[in-house]
Amino acid sequence: MLTSEQIAQGKAEARCTEQRLHEHDDCIRFAYEWLDAQTKLTAPNKRKTRAIKHIIERWAGRYVSTSDVEVAAHMHPGITGEYPYFNISSRLVHPNQRRLAGLGQAHTQNYTEDDTRRTYASEEP
Image: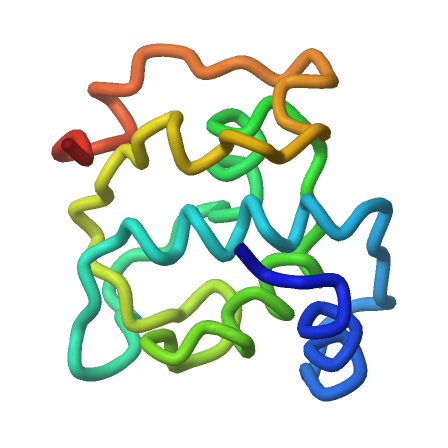
């Protein structure tokens, strides 16, 4: 789990494309965990773009900003590229809900997942 100190450093170092908005450190943790579950490619995927932040919001059940995703990607050692062109497969993996355990902000807002089969190609065990 990312510490508050690591997140503060990530916020200071990450290049964000929009005005920075961070409501809660857990939002960066959500994005980090979601990105961690994805299949990594050798280069950024420019073939298919997705509104990654919206997918993460529905999975975590809470608002996540684009800058939260950018900070999480910057902090993740396996992620390269810039939002939304990260080195993740377009065949998305639905992260296991256990990744949200201990994150108090999970499912605190009215963001819900619809049919995950339309978004994800597989489920994380």
